[in-house]
Length: 284
Ligand SMILES: [Zn+2]
Image (cartoon, rainbow, N blue to C red):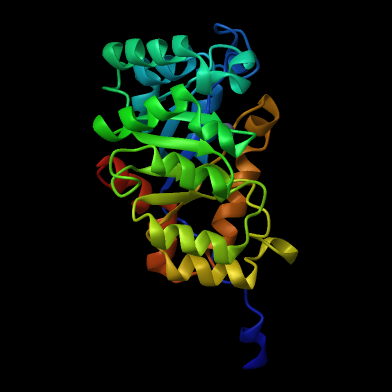
């Protein structure tokens, strides 16, 4: 019966995933005794086919422990370490003007991790776009471009322009990963313009308002945008609180489900290839 096929769900994406927005904050493991010690988080990644992560944490110890543990390699997870700008929660609202954060970043970069040098800065937050012009925000954006570090920024669309303007190339060269592609829900037309304007701007899709509609399916205008820019989007878990670790399976299942609606080549790019090629990883 031909009609039976029209309603058939596309198969979920089944390949490897690059988690481009992962935190391993101290409350997850508290030294080693927290609810999500290394074996727990690695098991979550492994059973979800996550084969590479952008790791960052408050403070940076979580990232370092992921980077150095033999279990991480045994789980088949490649770590792309980023320097988190926050030592404590108080740093969230002050990092862009706090010179001691800049010094901390330089010290971390000099030290590196067991998985190799840091590859990026962030995640950082700007709750007011104008703070993109804070003295330390300016210096960090220039540093990112000079040292070819990617940036993971939780900011609004206005701040994307301001941050880009603070790089020597005025945004032409820096790899900026826009966390949530704007958690405030910048209109799709605006996201489209920013992607066109900045060739190395990438959109990470966790928490993105308007991305999925009923039944977890892609909303039509987002589906179009993903098809227009298949090389510019990334997936992320954003494990910013412990609850997100509990939801890790569901987050990844949700991604695999809507990815299945896209052509196979686009699925593979968004899930794995875009992140892997940003950081020169080989296929697992
Ligand atoms: Zn985050």
